[in-house]
Length: 112
Length: 111
Image (cartoon, rainbow over all chains, first blue to last red; front, side, top):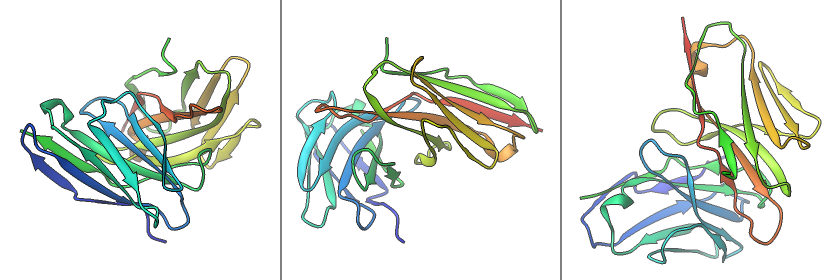
């Protein structure tokens, strides 16, 4: 069974640009979560999507947004990039909100 | 008080040692609990779920203490390959559902 996949693996952008990160969940999983992990820090919850709807978001500005498609894949958009947005962005999926989450390998975003 | 707290360590133990980590949580409505391990610059991988009755998987034992609001992870007969950061996750019940990760506890197993 294929795991959670994310693309691209690495992304380099400059300040003010926009970044789009993509995630495909495990087959059968309808919940997708996005996290930010800055170097040396813990996972910070960004967004939770389930059945195509945004269910909750963490304490991040509105320039962090996303969506979930009918096939349950998801994309995260970060507008007006700032240097401090440089981090590993992790996507996870689960069968439902109370079930264990399985993570993709992440997208490492570098903002110059 | 942070929602989920872990001692960052590092815990530095010899091979074969037994080591235990705790994770405390503040929301009494918390519903489900998990332990993950994360290797350097990699994604977290599920280690085990934590059930009210406690559960064991080989050398690993997880327990939940709802009265004192903490979960624990015990690793017996530590291996060099157990060196990693161990994250606890707490999922809370209710409308504002946010899965909350602890900052992690670093374990270093040395020969």
